[in-house]
Image (cartoon, rainbow, N blue to C red; front, side):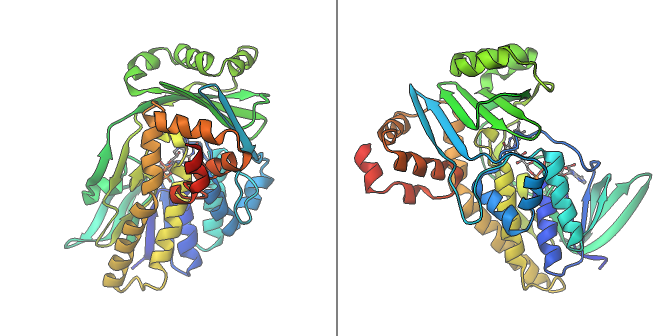
Length: 394
Ligand SMILES: Cc1cc2nc3c(=O)[nH]c(=O)nc-3n(C[C@H](O)[C@H](O)[C@H](O)COP(=O)(O)OP(=O)(O)OC[C@H]3O[C@@H](n4cnc5c(N)ncnc54)[C@H](O)[C@@H]3O)c2cc1C
């Protein structure tokens, strides 16, 4: 075996998986077809459970040192309400962050390399190597040449349209229809802080990031995508104006700092995430509408779960590896079930009467409002939120 593990895809899922497996003393090869450091489409927001993992892995200090502003307040405007609170906190996590991806992904890759992983960018995996029904390596294009490497485990961290998933034939085991579409861009000098504006058919997010820039993202229903893609600026500006008029005024007096970015391909699925000699992590395993900004946090949680599941398994012991990846896949779908369901509800862009009643009910209580934001961040679960004092105000 050339390596214990080959990880295909080196962004938040792949680089953090490589980092944790290298720290277990494994021989890890991390490859990506992109050039690093580089950007990818994302509105960048990392919820507290994701930030907590960055802190535990020793990467958060570098994120902070890169000049990424802490997002330590949160607000949500809906149905005439303005809910505001300090950002939820967790152990060692004073705030949320939204680092540029060319910074975050690069920091994770560097941490993986420091832990002993080998990293090759501009390396595109095109085929897998098989021994009967077991994946035993990858064949990849690096520059002008094709290289084959063998490994005890191949992990596909290669995104929603995963090549590894395609090559192993990993089926989608659960899915829901496309619900929203999104356009976003970066604005300089806004003083809005972090938060959302919501009404039927619209969701606007404000997310401060590096260099005094704020991402403003506008989510619209999927059936408006054909019109929005013909004129993103008109669709975006009209969505912001009708949902967040004061924010719209600020945008009208500011020059945007980047081009329009957007997508209607907001898939909602879980794939089979393990098989003989292979596993999937990150968007390759599970993708959800980006309206809840959960993808990076989910990727970091999955990296933690797969590393935990594999700890103690010798890669030469095929049965132990397969048992560990099966355990990972089961744990992953259990842990990510609740955010998946709440994301589907949000992405319908139809706030339910029950949710509006709950938001009105908690709005008079700073304590319940702050607990609601902890629920949104994934710091607490629905059953911890739904205590008698919340039920009383419904
Ligand atoms: C508009 C938009 C807004 C978003 N906003 C947020 C947000 O605010 N917060 C949040 O948490 N998430 C957000 N997301 C989602 C988030 O960006 C993803 O969930 C996250 O990037 C998934 O990380 P990943 O490492 O699994 O996959 P990816 O980031 O997709 O990385 C996969 C990598 O695999 C590489 N690769 C692919 N195929 C191969 C191959 N054959 N060989 C080698 N390498 C390969 C690619 O080059 C790529 O670098 C957003 C997404 C979109 C589209």
